[in-house]
Image 1: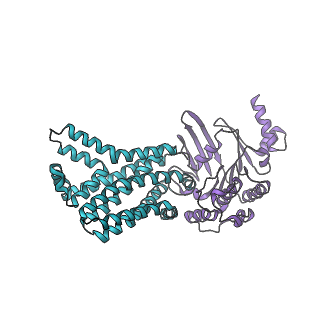
Image 2: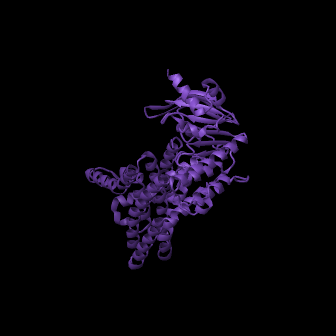
Image 3: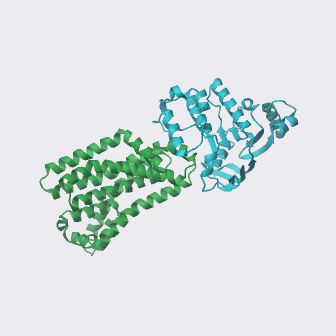
Length: 255
Length: 236
Protein backbone atom coordinates (compact mmCIF):
# COMPACT_ATOMS: atom_id res chain seq x y z
CA UNK A 1 0.00 0.00 0.00
CA UNK A 2 2.75 2.47 0.94
CA UNK A 3 4.45 2.15 -2.42
CA UNK A 4 1.33 2.96 -4.37
CA UNK A 5 0.45 5.81 -2.00
CA UNK A 6 3.97 7.21 -2.34
CA UNK A 7 3.74 6.96 -6.06
CA UNK A 8 0.41 8.80 -6.13
CA UNK A 9 1.70 11.56 -3.86
CA UNK A 10 4.76 12.17 -6.04
CA UNK A 11 2.53 12.10 -9.11
CA UNK A 12 0.16 14.69 -7.62
CA UNK A 13 3.00 16.94 -6.46
CA UNK A 14 4.49 16.86 -9.95
CA UNK A 15 1.11 18.07 -11.14
CA UNK A 16 1.33 21.85 -10.87
CA UNK A 17 -2.31 22.39 -9.95
CA UNK A 18 -1.73 21.38 -6.35
CA UNK A 19 1.09 23.91 -6.05
CA UNK A 20 -1.13 26.66 -7.41
CA UNK A 21 -3.81 25.60 -4.92
CA UNK A 22 -1.33 25.87 -2.05
CA UNK A 23 -0.13 29.28 -3.21
CA UNK A 24 -3.67 30.64 -3.57
CA UNK A 25 -4.66 29.40 -0.12
CA UNK A 26 -1.47 30.92 1.32
CA UNK A 27 -1.95 34.27 -0.43
CA UNK A 28 -5.49 34.49 0.81
CA UNK A 29 -4.85 33.52 4.41
CA UNK A 30 -1.72 35.67 4.79
CA UNK A 31 -3.51 38.70 3.42
CA UNK A 32 -6.70 38.22 5.43
CA UNK A 33 -4.84 37.60 8.66
CA UNK A 34 -2.35 40.41 8.25
CA UNK A 35 -4.77 43.07 7.00
CA UNK A 36 -7.61 42.51 9.46
CA UNK A 37 -7.12 43.95 12.96
CA UNK A 38 -10.03 42.10 14.49
CA UNK A 39 -8.91 38.47 14.69
CA UNK A 40 -12.46 37.13 15.07
CA UNK A 41 -13.53 38.88 11.86
CA UNK A 42 -10.44 37.64 10.04
CA UNK A 43 -11.19 34.12 11.17
CA UNK A 44 -14.73 34.37 9.84
CA UNK A 45 -13.57 35.54 6.41
CA UNK A 46 -11.06 32.75 6.35
CA UNK A 47 -13.69 30.23 7.41
CA UNK A 48 -16.07 31.24 4.64
CA UNK A 49 -13.43 30.85 1.97
CA UNK A 50 -12.23 27.55 3.37
CA UNK A 51 -15.73 26.11 3.44
CA UNK A 52 -16.29 27.12 -0.16
CA UNK A 53 -12.93 26.55 -1.82
CA UNK A 54 -11.54 23.52 -0.01
CA UNK A 55 -14.47 21.17 -0.74
CA UNK A 56 -14.69 22.39 -4.33
CA UNK A 57 -10.99 21.82 -4.96
CA UNK A 58 -11.02 18.44 -3.20
CA UNK A 59 -14.06 17.15 -5.06
CA UNK A 60 -13.12 18.32 -8.56
CA UNK A 61 -9.42 17.54 -8.39
CA UNK A 62 -10.03 14.07 -6.97
CA UNK A 63 -12.78 13.15 -9.41
CA UNK A 64 -10.63 14.11 -12.39
CA UNK A 65 -7.60 12.41 -10.86
CA UNK A 66 -9.53 9.16 -10.41
CA UNK A 67 -10.69 9.19 -14.03
CA UNK A 68 -7.20 9.91 -15.29
CA UNK A 69 -5.89 7.15 -13.09
CA UNK A 70 -8.05 4.49 -14.74
CA UNK A 71 -5.14 3.13 -16.81
CA UNK A 72 -2.96 2.96 -13.75
CA UNK A 73 -5.70 1.16 -11.82
CA UNK A 74 -6.16 -1.31 -14.65
CA UNK A 75 -2.44 -2.02 -14.70
CA UNK A 76 -2.40 -2.55 -10.93
CA UNK A 77 -5.39 -4.89 -10.96
CA UNK A 78 -3.55 -7.23 -13.35
CA UNK A 79 -0.72 -7.39 -10.79
CA UNK A 80 -0.82 -9.33 -7.52
CA UNK A 81 -2.29 -6.50 -5.47
CA UNK A 82 -5.57 -6.50 -3.57
CA UNK A 83 -8.22 -4.26 -5.04
CA UNK A 84 -8.83 -2.88 -1.57
CA UNK A 85 -5.18 -1.81 -1.37
CA UNK A 86 -5.38 -0.11 -4.75
CA UNK A 87 -8.49 1.84 -3.80
CA UNK A 88 -7.40 2.82 -0.30
CA UNK A 89 -3.96 3.83 -1.59
CA UNK A 90 -5.61 6.25 -3.96
CA UNK A 91 -7.66 7.67 -1.10
CA UNK A 92 -4.59 7.96 1.12
CA UNK A 93 -2.49 9.52 -1.64
CA UNK A 94 -5.12 12.14 -2.47
CA UNK A 95 -5.90 12.89 1.19
CA UNK A 96 -2.28 13.26 2.20
CA UNK A 97 -1.30 15.50 -0.68
CA UNK A 98 -4.36 17.77 -0.48
CA UNK A 99 -4.01 17.95 3.31
CA UNK A 100 -0.37 18.93 2.99
CA UNK A 101 -1.41 21.69 0.61
CA UNK A 102 -4.02 22.85 3.13
CA UNK A 103 -1.58 22.79 6.05
CA UNK A 104 1.03 24.76 4.11
CA UNK A 105 -1.46 27.24 2.72
CA UNK A 106 -3.76 27.81 5.69
CA UNK A 107 -2.11 26.11 8.66
CA UNK A 108 1.15 28.03 8.60
CA UNK A 109 -0.38 31.53 8.71
CA UNK A 110 -2.88 30.42 11.35
CA UNK A 111 -0.11 29.13 13.58
CA UNK A 112 1.72 32.43 13.15
CA UNK A 113 -1.25 34.79 13.66
CA UNK A 114 -3.81 32.96 15.71
CA UNK A 115 -2.52 29.88 17.48
CA UNK A 116 -5.64 29.55 19.64
CA UNK A 117 -8.71 27.32 19.86
CA UNK A 118 -10.42 29.07 16.95
CA UNK A 119 -7.36 28.77 14.73
CA UNK A 120 -6.87 25.12 15.46
CA UNK A 121 -10.54 24.33 14.99
CA UNK A 122 -10.36 25.86 11.50
CA UNK A 123 -7.33 23.74 10.79
CA UNK A 124 -8.99 20.60 12.12
CA UNK A 125 -12.16 21.20 10.11
CA UNK A 126 -10.15 21.73 6.93
CA UNK A 127 -8.44 18.42 7.59
CA UNK A 128 -11.85 16.75 7.92
CA UNK A 129 -13.52 18.47 4.96
CA UNK A 130 -10.67 17.53 2.58
CA UNK A 131 -10.93 13.72 2.96
CA UNK A 132 -14.75 13.90 3.15
CA UNK A 133 -14.91 15.44 -0.30
CA UNK A 134 -12.21 13.12 -1.64
CA UNK A 135 -14.32 10.17 -0.50
CA UNK A 136 -17.38 11.70 -2.20
CA UNK A 137 -15.32 12.28 -5.36
CA UNK A 138 -14.16 8.68 -5.43
CA UNK A 139 -17.73 7.52 -5.04
CA UNK A 140 -18.83 9.77 -7.94
CA UNK A 141 -16.00 8.49 -10.12
CA UNK A 142 -17.06 4.89 -9.62
CA UNK A 143 -20.79 5.51 -9.99
CA UNK A 144 -20.42 6.95 -13.50
CA UNK A 145 -18.24 5.41 -16.18
CA UNK A 146 -18.45 8.58 -18.19
CA UNK A 147 -16.00 11.25 -17.08
CA UNK A 148 -18.14 14.30 -17.83
CA UNK A 149 -21.04 12.75 -15.99
CA UNK A 150 -18.93 11.81 -12.97
CA UNK A 151 -17.51 15.33 -12.67
CA UNK A 152 -21.03 16.69 -13.11
CA UNK A 153 -22.36 14.59 -10.24
CA UNK A 154 -19.41 15.63 -8.06
CA UNK A 155 -20.07 19.33 -8.67
CA UNK A 156 -23.78 18.84 -8.00
CA UNK A 157 -23.03 17.24 -4.64
CA UNK A 158 -20.74 20.13 -3.76
CA UNK A 159 -23.34 22.68 -4.88
CA UNK A 160 -26.01 20.93 -2.86
CA UNK A 161 -24.00 20.66 0.34
CA UNK A 162 -22.48 24.12 0.23
CA UNK A 163 -25.35 26.25 -1.10
CA UNK A 164 -28.66 24.53 -1.75
CA UNK A 165 -28.80 22.76 1.60
CA UNK A 166 -28.45 26.06 3.45
CA UNK A 167 -31.18 27.51 1.29
CA UNK A 168 -33.51 24.69 2.25
CA UNK A 169 -32.66 25.09 5.93
CA UNK A 170 -33.31 28.84 5.79
CA UNK A 171 -36.57 28.32 3.91
CA UNK A 172 -37.78 25.83 6.51
CA UNK A 173 -36.71 28.18 9.27
CA UNK A 174 -38.87 30.99 7.92
CA UNK A 175 -41.80 28.72 7.14
CA UNK A 176 -41.88 27.23 10.62
CA UNK A 177 -40.70 30.28 12.52
CA UNK A 178 -43.75 30.07 14.81
CA UNK A 179 -42.91 26.61 16.01
CA UNK A 180 -40.10 25.40 18.28
CA UNK A 181 -37.75 24.39 15.51
CA UNK A 182 -34.44 24.55 17.33
CA UNK A 183 -34.01 20.81 17.71
CA UNK A 184 -34.79 19.91 14.07
CA UNK A 185 -32.51 22.79 13.03
CA UNK A 186 -29.66 21.36 15.03
CA UNK A 187 -30.18 17.95 13.52
CA UNK A 188 -30.39 19.33 9.99
CA UNK A 189 -27.20 21.32 10.40
CA UNK A 190 -25.41 18.36 11.89
CA UNK A 191 -26.19 16.21 8.86
CA UNK A 192 -24.32 18.47 6.44
CA UNK A 193 -20.54 18.25 6.92
CA UNK A 194 -19.97 21.82 5.74
CA UNK A 195 -22.58 23.27 8.11
CA UNK A 196 -21.30 21.15 10.93
CA UNK A 197 -17.74 22.31 10.32
CA UNK A 198 -18.92 25.93 10.24
CA UNK A 199 -20.73 25.56 13.57
CA UNK A 200 -17.76 23.87 15.19
CA UNK A 201 -15.52 26.79 14.24
CA UNK A 202 -18.08 29.51 15.08
CA UNK A 203 -18.41 28.14 18.57
CA UNK A 204 -14.68 28.58 19.07
CA UNK A 205 -14.58 32.08 17.58
CA UNK A 206 -16.27 34.26 20.18
CA UNK A 207 -19.18 35.28 18.02
CA UNK A 208 -21.76 32.64 18.82
CA UNK A 209 -23.48 35.23 21.00
CA UNK A 210 -24.31 37.08 17.78
CA UNK A 211 -26.30 34.15 16.54
CA UNK A 212 -29.17 34.77 18.96
CA UNK A 213 -31.32 32.10 20.48
CA UNK A 214 -30.44 29.42 17.91
CA UNK A 215 -26.81 30.17 18.60
CA UNK A 216 -27.40 29.55 22.29
CA UNK A 217 -28.99 26.20 21.47
CA UNK A 218 -26.05 25.35 19.22
CA UNK A 219 -23.62 26.30 21.94
CA UNK A 220 -25.53 24.23 24.47
CA UNK A 221 -25.53 21.14 22.23
CA UNK A 222 -22.31 21.33 20.20
CA UNK A 223 -20.29 23.19 22.81
CA UNK A 224 -20.36 20.35 25.29
CA UNK A 225 -17.79 17.62 25.27
CA UNK A 226 -20.31 15.02 24.14
CA UNK A 227 -21.50 17.35 21.39
CA UNK A 228 -17.90 17.73 20.23
CA UNK A 229 -17.39 13.98 20.16
CA UNK A 230 -20.66 13.40 18.31
CA UNK A 231 -19.71 16.02 15.73
CA UNK A 232 -16.33 14.40 15.15
CA UNK A 233 -18.12 11.08 14.79
CA UNK A 234 -20.53 12.52 12.21
CA UNK A 235 -17.66 13.97 10.20
CA UNK A 236 -15.87 10.62 10.33
CA UNK A 237 -19.02 8.90 9.08
CA UNK A 238 -18.97 11.28 6.11
CA UNK A 239 -15.57 9.86 5.23
CA UNK A 240 -16.25 6.22 6.03
CA UNK A 241 -19.61 5.71 4.33
CA UNK A 242 -18.82 7.09 0.85
CA UNK A 243 -15.46 5.33 1.01
CA UNK A 244 -17.03 2.06 2.01
CA UNK A 245 -19.70 2.16 -0.72
CA UNK A 246 -17.13 3.07 -3.36
CA UNK A 247 -14.81 0.29 -2.19
CA UNK A 248 -17.62 -2.28 -2.48
CA UNK A 249 -18.37 -0.98 -5.98
CA UNK A 250 -14.72 -1.07 -6.97
CA UNK A 251 -14.28 -4.64 -5.71
CA UNK A 252 -17.03 -5.76 -8.07
CA UNK A 253 -16.06 -3.64 -11.03
CA UNK A 254 -15.14 -5.19 -14.37
CA UNK A 255 -12.08 -3.59 -15.86
CA UNK B 1 -2.77 -25.73 -13.32
CA UNK B 2 -5.79 -23.61 -14.20
CA UNK B 3 -9.23 -25.14 -13.95
CA UNK B 4 -12.28 -23.23 -15.09
CA UNK B 5 -15.65 -24.52 -13.97
CA UNK B 6 -18.95 -23.25 -15.29
CA UNK B 7 -17.93 -19.64 -15.86
CA UNK B 8 -20.75 -17.37 -16.97
CA UNK B 9 -20.56 -13.67 -17.60
CA UNK B 10 -22.95 -11.17 -19.06
CA UNK B 11 -22.57 -7.46 -19.60
CA UNK B 12 -26.06 -6.07 -19.32
CA UNK B 13 -28.25 -8.22 -21.52
CA UNK B 14 -25.55 -9.72 -23.68
CA UNK B 15 -24.18 -13.02 -22.49
CA UNK B 16 -20.48 -13.01 -23.23
CA UNK B 17 -19.42 -16.27 -21.63
CA UNK B 18 -21.86 -19.16 -21.51
CA UNK B 19 -20.83 -21.91 -19.15
CA UNK B 20 -17.13 -22.29 -19.94
CA UNK B 21 -15.32 -25.37 -18.61
CA UNK B 22 -11.61 -25.83 -19.22
CA UNK B 23 -8.59 -27.49 -17.77
CA UNK B 24 -5.21 -26.03 -18.68
CA UNK B 25 -1.99 -27.83 -17.78
CA UNK B 26 1.67 -27.00 -17.44
CA UNK B 27 3.65 -27.39 -20.64
CA UNK B 28 0.72 -26.57 -22.87
CA UNK B 29 0.94 -23.75 -25.33
CA UNK B 30 -2.66 -23.00 -26.11
CA UNK B 31 -4.05 -20.89 -28.88
CA UNK B 32 -7.37 -19.32 -27.95
CA UNK B 33 -8.99 -18.68 -31.26
CA UNK B 34 -12.32 -17.38 -32.43
CA UNK B 35 -14.04 -14.56 -34.27
CA UNK B 36 -14.17 -11.03 -32.88
CA UNK B 37 -16.36 -10.54 -29.82
CA UNK B 38 -16.56 -14.26 -29.06
CA UNK B 39 -15.44 -13.74 -25.45
CA UNK B 40 -11.70 -14.45 -25.69
CA UNK B 41 -10.59 -11.33 -23.86
CA UNK B 42 -13.37 -11.63 -21.29
CA UNK B 43 -12.26 -15.18 -20.55
CA UNK B 44 -8.66 -14.07 -20.13
CA UNK B 45 -9.66 -11.14 -17.94
CA UNK B 46 -11.72 -13.53 -15.81
CA UNK B 47 -8.63 -15.64 -15.22
CA UNK B 48 -6.88 -12.48 -14.02
CA UNK B 49 -10.00 -11.51 -12.01
CA UNK B 50 -10.12 -8.21 -13.81
CA UNK B 51 -13.58 -9.24 -14.90
CA UNK B 52 -15.61 -10.96 -12.21
CA UNK B 53 -17.78 -13.80 -13.53
CA UNK B 54 -21.47 -13.96 -12.57
CA UNK B 55 -21.24 -17.64 -11.92
CA UNK B 56 -18.69 -20.43 -11.76
CA UNK B 57 -15.24 -20.80 -10.23
CA UNK B 58 -11.71 -20.60 -11.52
CA UNK B 59 -9.02 -22.61 -9.73
CA UNK B 60 -5.32 -21.86 -9.92
CA UNK B 61 -3.18 -24.71 -8.58
CA UNK B 62 -6.34 -26.23 -7.01
CA UNK B 63 -7.17 -23.00 -5.16
CA UNK B 64 -10.11 -20.81 -6.05
CA UNK B 65 -8.95 -17.41 -7.21
CA UNK B 66 -11.94 -15.57 -5.74
CA UNK B 67 -10.72 -13.04 -3.19
CA UNK B 68 -7.12 -14.09 -3.66
CA UNK B 69 -4.48 -12.16 -5.53
CA UNK B 70 -1.23 -13.93 -4.67
CA UNK B 71 -1.71 -16.31 -7.60
CA UNK B 72 -1.09 -13.39 -9.94
CA UNK B 73 2.56 -13.55 -8.88
CA UNK B 74 2.75 -16.57 -11.15
CA UNK B 75 1.12 -14.94 -14.15
CA UNK B 76 2.59 -12.67 -16.76
CA UNK B 77 -0.11 -10.85 -18.65
CA UNK B 78 0.20 -8.96 -21.88
CA UNK B 79 -3.02 -7.05 -22.63
CA UNK B 80 -4.40 -6.51 -26.09
CA UNK B 81 -4.20 -2.75 -25.66
CA UNK B 82 -1.76 -1.83 -22.92
CA UNK B 83 -2.99 1.18 -20.99
CA UNK B 84 -0.35 2.89 -18.89
CA UNK B 85 -0.16 6.11 -16.86
CA UNK B 86 0.55 8.71 -19.52
CA UNK B 87 3.00 10.83 -17.60
CA UNK B 88 5.33 8.01 -16.67
CA UNK B 89 8.37 7.09 -18.68
CA UNK B 90 8.97 3.49 -19.77
CA UNK B 91 11.61 2.92 -17.13
CA UNK B 92 9.39 4.37 -14.40
CA UNK B 93 6.59 1.95 -15.30
CA UNK B 94 8.99 -1.01 -15.24
CA UNK B 95 10.57 0.10 -11.96
CA UNK B 96 7.20 0.69 -10.36
CA UNK B 97 5.91 -2.77 -11.25
CA UNK B 98 9.19 -4.28 -10.05
CA UNK B 99 8.88 -2.55 -6.69
CA UNK B 100 5.20 -3.47 -6.35
CA UNK B 101 5.74 -7.15 -7.16
CA UNK B 102 8.57 -7.48 -4.62
CA UNK B 103 10.23 -10.08 -6.78
CA UNK B 104 13.31 -11.72 -5.25
CA UNK B 105 14.66 -13.66 -8.23
CA UNK B 106 16.57 -12.49 -11.26
CA UNK B 107 14.34 -10.54 -13.63
CA UNK B 108 14.24 -11.67 -17.23
CA UNK B 109 15.28 -8.68 -19.31
CA UNK B 110 15.89 -10.49 -22.56
CA UNK B 111 12.97 -8.83 -24.33
CA UNK B 112 13.96 -5.43 -22.95
CA UNK B 113 17.35 -5.80 -24.60
CA UNK B 114 16.08 -7.46 -27.76
CA UNK B 115 13.47 -4.76 -28.37
CA UNK B 116 16.05 -2.04 -27.78
CA UNK B 117 13.91 -0.36 -25.13
CA UNK B 118 17.04 0.85 -23.33
CA UNK B 119 17.44 3.67 -25.86
CA UNK B 120 13.83 4.78 -25.43
CA UNK B 121 13.53 4.28 -21.70
CA UNK B 122 13.05 7.94 -20.78
CA UNK B 123 10.23 8.46 -23.26
CA UNK B 124 6.83 9.13 -21.73
CA UNK B 125 4.17 6.47 -22.25
CA UNK B 126 1.85 9.01 -23.87
CA UNK B 127 4.34 9.66 -26.69
CA UNK B 128 4.86 6.01 -27.60
CA UNK B 129 3.51 4.39 -30.72
CA UNK B 130 1.17 1.42 -30.43
CA UNK B 131 3.98 -0.96 -31.31
CA UNK B 132 6.35 0.38 -28.68
CA UNK B 133 3.60 0.19 -26.07
CA UNK B 134 3.15 -3.46 -27.04
CA UNK B 135 6.88 -4.01 -26.57
CA UNK B 136 6.61 -2.59 -23.05
CA UNK B 137 3.62 -4.86 -22.33
CA UNK B 138 5.52 -7.90 -23.60
CA UNK B 139 8.59 -7.04 -21.54
CA UNK B 140 6.43 -6.69 -18.42
CA UNK B 141 4.70 -10.02 -19.05
CA UNK B 142 7.99 -11.93 -19.25
CA UNK B 143 9.90 -9.86 -16.69
CA UNK B 144 9.31 -12.01 -13.62
CA UNK B 145 9.73 -15.43 -15.31
CA UNK B 146 6.15 -16.40 -14.41
CA UNK B 147 4.87 -19.98 -14.66
CA UNK B 148 1.89 -18.89 -16.71
CA UNK B 149 1.94 -16.47 -19.60
CA UNK B 150 -1.28 -14.97 -20.87
CA UNK B 151 -0.82 -13.07 -24.09
CA UNK B 152 -3.78 -11.29 -25.63
CA UNK B 153 -3.11 -10.63 -29.33
CA UNK B 154 0.62 -10.40 -28.67
CA UNK B 155 1.76 -9.64 -32.18
CA UNK B 156 -0.93 -7.11 -33.07
CA UNK B 157 0.83 -3.84 -33.84
CA UNK B 158 4.35 -5.23 -33.67
CA UNK B 159 6.63 -4.91 -36.67
CA UNK B 160 7.77 -8.21 -38.27
CA UNK B 161 11.17 -8.07 -36.60
CA UNK B 162 9.73 -7.51 -33.12
CA UNK B 163 7.05 -10.12 -33.59
CA UNK B 164 9.74 -12.63 -34.60
CA UNK B 165 11.68 -11.80 -31.42
CA UNK B 166 8.55 -12.33 -29.36
CA UNK B 167 7.82 -15.61 -31.16
CA UNK B 168 11.24 -16.97 -30.36
CA UNK B 169 10.84 -15.90 -26.76
CA UNK B 170 7.51 -17.73 -26.54
CA UNK B 171 9.08 -20.89 -27.97
CA UNK B 172 11.91 -20.67 -25.44
CA UNK B 173 9.50 -20.30 -22.53
CA UNK B 174 7.40 -23.17 -23.83
CA UNK B 175 10.43 -25.41 -23.71
CA UNK B 176 10.80 -24.56 -20.00
CA UNK B 177 7.46 -26.26 -19.43
CA UNK B 178 5.35 -23.18 -18.79
CA UNK B 179 1.67 -22.82 -19.49
CA UNK B 180 1.16 -20.31 -22.27
CA UNK B 181 -2.21 -19.02 -23.38
CA UNK B 182 -2.28 -16.94 -26.55
CA UNK B 183 -5.23 -15.34 -28.26
CA UNK B 184 -5.01 -14.32 -31.83
CA UNK B 185 -7.09 -14.17 -34.92
CA UNK B 186 -4.08 -14.34 -37.18
CA UNK B 187 -3.91 -18.11 -37.43
CA UNK B 188 -0.79 -18.63 -39.49
CA UNK B 189 1.32 -16.67 -37.01
CA UNK B 190 0.79 -19.35 -34.42
CA UNK B 191 1.59 -22.35 -36.55
CA UNK B 192 4.70 -23.80 -35.00
CA UNK B 193 4.05 -22.43 -31.51
CA UNK B 194 1.00 -24.23 -30.32
CA UNK B 195 0.44 -27.59 -28.70
CA UNK B 196 -3.31 -27.12 -28.26
CA UNK B 197 -6.11 -25.09 -29.76
CA UNK B 198 -9.27 -23.80 -28.15
CA UNK B 199 -11.88 -22.54 -30.56
CA UNK B 200 -14.52 -20.23 -29.14
CA UNK B 201 -17.65 -18.90 -30.71
CA UNK B 202 -20.52 -16.87 -29.20
CA UNK B 203 -19.21 -17.34 -25.69
CA UNK B 204 -18.94 -21.10 -25.95
CA UNK B 205 -16.05 -23.49 -26.46
CA UNK B 206 -16.53 -25.17 -29.83
CA UNK B 207 -13.55 -27.47 -29.42
CA UNK B 208 -10.38 -27.95 -27.39
CA UNK B 209 -7.95 -30.27 -29.17
CA UNK B 210 -4.25 -30.85 -29.47
CA UNK B 211 -2.71 -29.67 -32.70
CA UNK B 212 -1.75 -33.25 -33.58
CA UNK B 213 -5.36 -34.37 -33.30
CA UNK B 214 -6.52 -31.47 -35.42
CA UNK B 215 -4.00 -32.12 -38.15
CA UNK B 216 -4.67 -35.83 -38.17
CA UNK B 217 -8.41 -35.24 -38.49
CA UNK B 218 -8.14 -32.73 -41.28
CA UNK B 219 -5.15 -34.19 -43.09
CA UNK B 220 -3.60 -30.74 -43.29
CA UNK B 221 -0.06 -30.07 -42.16
CA UNK B 222 -0.70 -26.53 -41.00
CA UNK B 223 -2.74 -25.57 -37.97
CA UNK B 224 -4.35 -22.63 -39.69
CA UNK B 225 -5.64 -24.81 -42.51
CA UNK B 226 -6.66 -27.58 -40.14
CA UNK B 227 -8.74 -25.17 -38.07
CA UNK B 228 -10.30 -23.70 -41.18
CA UNK B 229 -11.15 -27.19 -42.35
CA UNK B 230 -12.60 -28.16 -39.00
CA UNK B 231 -14.82 -25.07 -38.78
CA UNK B 232 -16.14 -25.62 -42.28
CA UNK B 233 -16.88 -29.27 -41.70
CA UNK B 234 -18.57 -28.49 -38.39
CA UNK B 235 -20.74 -25.91 -40.10
CA UNK B 236 -21.96 -28.41 -42.68
